[in-house]
Amino acid sequence: MSQKEKAKILIVDDEIRVREILSRKLTDDGYHCLSAADGNLALKMLKTDPVELVLLDIMMPGKTGPEVLKEIRSHYPDTAVIMVTAIADVQTAIGLMRMGAYDYIIKPIELNVLSVSLDRALEKRKLIIDNRDYQQHLEQRVEEQTKKIRQSFLNSTTSLAYALEAKDKYTHGHSERVTKIAVAVAKEMAASKNIAEKIKLAGLLHDVGKIGVSELILNKPGRLTDEEFELVKAHCEVGERILSPIVEDKEILEMVRHHHERYDGKGYPDGLSGQQMTKGSNIVVAADSYTKVLSQGAMALAVADAYDAMTSDRPYRPAMPPEEACSELVKGKGKQFAPIIVDTFISLMNKGKKSIRFLPKIIMSKDNR
Ligand SMILES: [Fe+2]
Image 1 (cartoon, protein in one colour):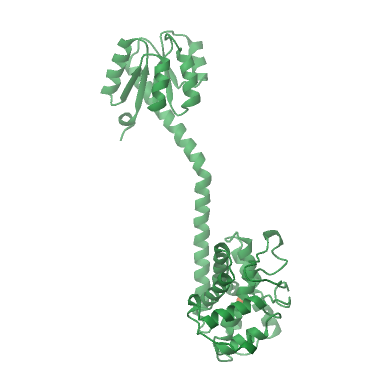
Image 2: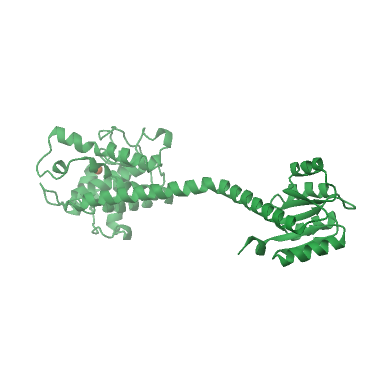
């Protein structure tokens, strides 16, 4: 649709003859025209029926053209105004342009001049509005674009982590299982939806740093040498480093970095320790102190990770039965693992909780808990 078909123009002039001639000409040209005999009526009309452009006579009884112009500029800044004057006075014209008029034309109006002036004013108005919208939405667009880029990086990183797991029958599906367990435990402990989401992402990506560890070491059938073990341990920090340009959330990065820490502070890479938690305490460390203590997420991931590792086949040993793995978790309570996390996990297993239905329902004896 052309600009002319859409534009609505208000003609403000005290001479009925001028209003009629202009209205006929502009309607013939495809504009939609309204007219007003004085400034007050024009302002009243604008209140209920906004227009793209006002053709405004300067000399009128009542409110003068410049007075009306001033009000239009302040109340309807998106309305273009062309002043119409019988006075061929350059100074007046410059003054009106300074007040915000787009153009001025001199009476008697030459219809060709009017057409050119209207086209130019409407084009300028459109540019101003488009530019302002662009500026206003620029920030939002940049943000959306950044989000998309991040998500796409994240997707590729997750795919890479999965591809790495898929190559090894022993770790196939590990991240997903760990995620399900850790999220189920966190939810059972009344973690907020937000925290559960963070744990989910951290769980899916927790071992992404293994991309940086040689497959020969990862798949080595026998015991690792001290040197090799140091290289494997580095996957926590490498994971954090890989993710930090794409994951802004410090809590997620903290969970990835600390999923091999121990409750008693003897884990790696930083030797952080956990702290007593009760159900619903929802411990999440503030971003500025996130390296000081282990968060609920990191501790839940540690338990889930250990359980899945124990119950998966390894090149050097067969999978442990679930009951036995749970007993190991219980033995590690307060040492390797946060007691409340182990208790919650065992209780979920006992209940055969739907969210971790892929795990067998087990019944641990009271002395074993
Ligand atoms: Fe790991």
